[in-house]
Length: 79
Image 1 (cartoon, rainbow, N blue to C red):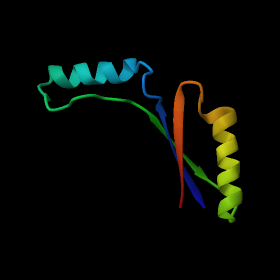
Image 2: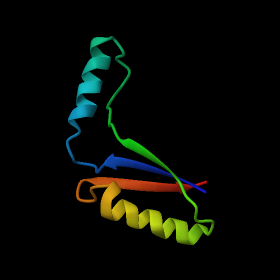
Image 3: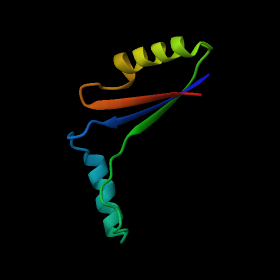
């Protein structure tokens, strides 16, 4: 089983990297972009076959090390 974890800054947290990307896009005349938020994606190959156990374990990983839950949100997809 695979886990796809998408991590992004919470709403209201300044995304300086997103602002830099947005500025670069503007300077390259890509004017149709209203806002940019930059996040990260983590892909895990799991040995667990039980979906509930896998979700529980990956959630624990996110809460303890993969995401800074003070300023970041995360979403987990199991495939």
